[in-house]
Length: 223
Image (cartoon, rainbow, N blue to C red; front, side, top):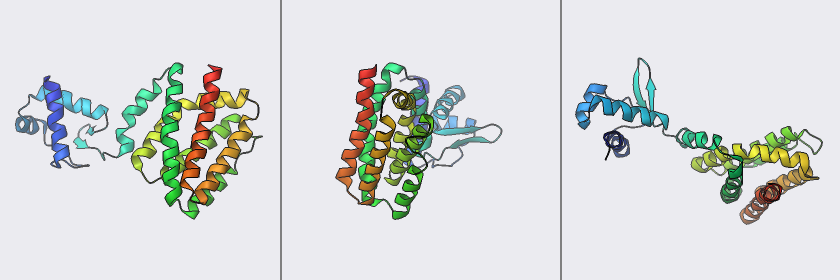
């Protein structure tokens, strides 16, 4: 195993075992290197690598800390990869959304509060089919984020939130070029919300699937 990889595994082992917990400060470099049987050079490289994926936080003049290890922070690395996507892969993002978002919607339907339902109705009321396409798409993104949040699974929420970004341009393009797309999107949103309010998990799942698949199928034909 390369020396840097060995160093990474040893630090990871300290975190997994609970020896280092979220928010803990790492021992001084010389002490930690000696403790793990590593050179200070390989330890620095390991710390640098783990800071890039948001496992460690290097604070200049203060020390190195374990991050919160919250899913949102750890998925920032995925967000970076998503930002580098090419147009030809946008369909793959829709395919993943078609798997994840209906699942999130079904989970939300089982536990969503009346307050969240009311807030979502107010949110949808902010746009009509006369609204600018960009405003409707932004409203759309927030609608799906809030549903994923209501599912109560932080990892699922972070994945849905991260995967929404690469599909914005396709949604705007559809709104500008496909007749009736804006009205259809709004109608589908209200149908999903009605299913959530009625706690109809299977119906909500089906409606969310159709909603995401509609844009995906349009894009397949358009590309």
